[in-house]
Image (cartoon, rainbow over all chains, first blue to last red; front, side, top):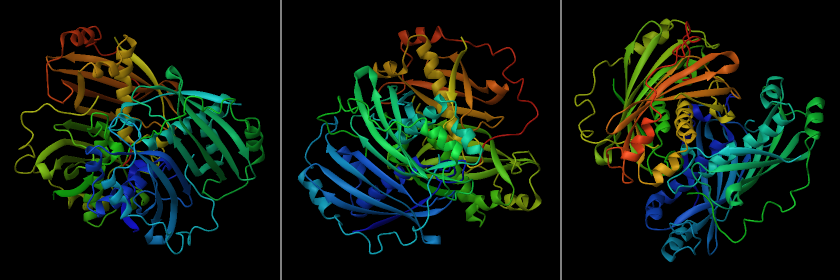
Length: 155
Length: 155
Length: 155
Length: 155
């Protein structure tokens, strides 16, 4: 499934160029995957408290167009891959009001126990995750409005 | 040149697992490139105020070992590539006290004018940047203490 | 009027004790006053872009009970005072699920022009603000569930 | 004693008016009290790990003049009061290059055990804190350069 979550840009998330500061996109992506899980009745908080942590082991971001203060954005999240110990989410951040593709990215997460030791994804968690798996990208690749511009976030 | 800058982890930068929250590494990288410029007598603030913005167009991060509250870390920064409109920095974050490689990453920045329009890097800025260019990685690849572990930052 | 806005606690807003880090309450309060204005059809973004800034000149916070990751909180905001150049908002942060009063506070804001120079609140802005004025505190003072505990946020 | 700690303003800490966002002053104050403790050989990290938490129960801030990106600021910290269960720090934030008083404030912290339960300050911690006690304000009250301006931080 592809899950969409709204996020409104806060004043403190914007830099002196008037653009969302680049580090602040990672929390938006995190909201995306948290709400994807919640939409299927699974709070990440509960998962963590039951002994399975999903820790970020790598992340990538592409900044295509700037977003500004008070913008209403949408995070489009997909769980694209599950291996024995890791899962990969992909994200697209859009501003629907202007049909603008703001940023894309991914995070890879690895399962660990509460002490941070790596472990295989427990079977019940795997079953949950497999029900969310969506390897196919959206039809337009989310890229329709992103062409032609160099843009990003400072500095 | 390879530039090293110390950064001490603040209380609010750490999550409930006791690890630096993953989004907080990007500001550490930014401190690294800012201080690399400053070490050669060039404040990014001045560059920006003179009309050249360097905006982040993509970023990548690998999280190898967790860092915790009050840790003294070092950001090792290199400017590895310059094209007509873009430059690429690479970063390694270490905790010298335990000889631990915490995280690695890169950012690509594009030159724009004050309105955010892409432009070629102006000649004086290019001359400055070329004096910093260091395409060669450090001898040990910064990887000596990173082997064997899956680790990252939550969630 | 008394305005209520929901806020869900993000992973990165929580510290290593598992509590919302104290500085992160000020953005929650800002969301409260922004949404109070918006509820009457006035975006702070538009106000600012039309030439009136409302800058924070003082703030106070009392931390009564901790809030944790993923908690659904409610910010209750009132505009309690308007003078020639300043306005004062008061805030209460609650967790409805447990009927817990988490934190209270206030901010005083002063009108300035776009260069940061103090000025009297322009008449149309004053009219808007006066329509929101609510000097009377809520019946229970928001304090019913806050008695008896020393609690706060680290460190 | 009065302790001074340098803090340089980071890019992401500044808002779209070019001023440090108001919530970002609280981490500066926290750095002030942490470094005050460290200057006497006591890491707050160690204090916390030995079982005594000092949680923030109230905070107040006055914003006098704006600070901007890359500014070199100094946090001047004093421990002004110790009771059975609480301590109070006062802070002044200055920009020495322009002799500008940027912001002032205080935080009150309460001792708790690791579960967040209030407790009396343990005797060894009290002895440490009493050695830092400085109830007398600086001679000029830090206010010499703060007169005459309404200024703050948005919104």
